[in-house]
Image (tube, rainbow, N blue to C red):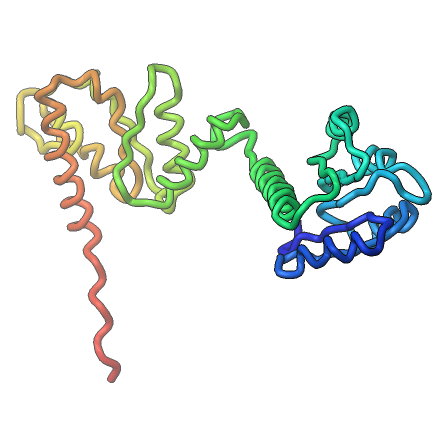
Length: 280
């Protein structure tokens, strides 16, 4: 819909048309008035109305036929039927044929304005739905699906990918938590660095820090060589700690400490650039 809604008024009574136009003088509508169906047909293509105020009894035909025809347009307007010969049967038939609303003459300015505002609101809502539908993605990374729930997942992944914040992914086993983590990594500025996944539930508690931060030869029994930790390998990329819930409560308590150590390690490796000095 255009910024200013366009209204086509099909009314064969010049005096009534003038009254209705006066009702809308202080409203933000662009109104064109015609007296016959033939001129109304011409305006559908030349004026492209968003809303049609349609009289039923017209000199060259029945407005109900025109109502039916508007349904076949690529972007059909909202049609508000208005007649002085209204009946409940006529109202039901008009709505069945696709009318947005039904006004029985005479009606006042308030009734007309409310009806038009409702029609304009529905048009805007329809445009928003179409806009969102055009943005639907059927696939995102290794995910496949275009339901509203999946669109929400994709949007969340996009949001996390643009951030350096720590993400917490929840879900039942097999729902794709690691796929989500990889998608976040692959859509971030870290995509050219390593993505390292650690299964926390498979690592004994006493070896967790060694797994994350590495060790030097002889640090403990079995440490025959120096070994880089996952945090070092993933520095500048993404470290995914999987199955945190499988860790003992004591190990889980240490995660905050681990996270702080990771931050310090990153700051040491990537110190902030000092502001440029004064030009000389």
